[in-house]
Image (cartoon, rainbow, N blue to C red; front, top):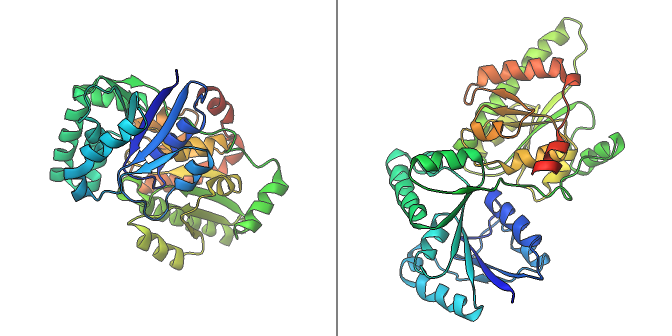
Length: 356
């Protein structure tokens, strides 16, 4: 008998957790499991719904607003559970975890992809964030099977009384592959309207405070000016560019830096991250908090060396260069030192293919 699994999420908006969900259901053993994805709310912009449909995954949307969900979610979800004869729920996120509480007799796996007391406080502020985190951890405490996406997340939530297993996030190594040679890299730059000459650094992900893209961009601008000074001394200087791929509330600041500095290239949101990575030379991340970041996994799978903030989840992906999170001056120094010794650094795709 096949096991019918309902994967519950708020929406399929493009994000790290939804990319992880796609990887899980896409490669599920269909001889033994029937997956169905259940979304709680209507899809907005930048939805990955089409990717799930292309993978042959049935999708049911409850089409509830947050307010409607308070009153109707149990009734609507109950109907879906009965119609598809679900044996197991797999939830990701606060709303999904909360919805599954209404069905205590149905086994539920909660995927924990962030540390609530970091993520919610940075998103909502200390008071609302702490209250939200306390509510979420109370749900996780009552659930029998929680899975943390990194050892760091496991260790942090354990301090809050939440038991979990560790299954690290992974990456689709068939999709995220390096450029086969220099000619493909140049061809990709032409396709993406990126400079064909020069050295390209790249960062991807949401433009939000937790990711700290503004500090990263400002540190990069200082690094470029520092190298320009070498050029005035007769030293040949390669052109440097930072490509920023993503969207979010900090978009206006990034667009302004893009407008004022030719070294900053804002590419906007894209579903074609692999080509941007394969066209680049180094990956950067300045995040204050992560679960186990998709962006870094994808970059390493494309064999890019990485310069990362020194948070514990980043250090679960060894072999990178680190700087103190939030310290733009140190990042400028690290960029400069890395570039001068860039021939010493290489990507770590072998680690990714073996472990992630």
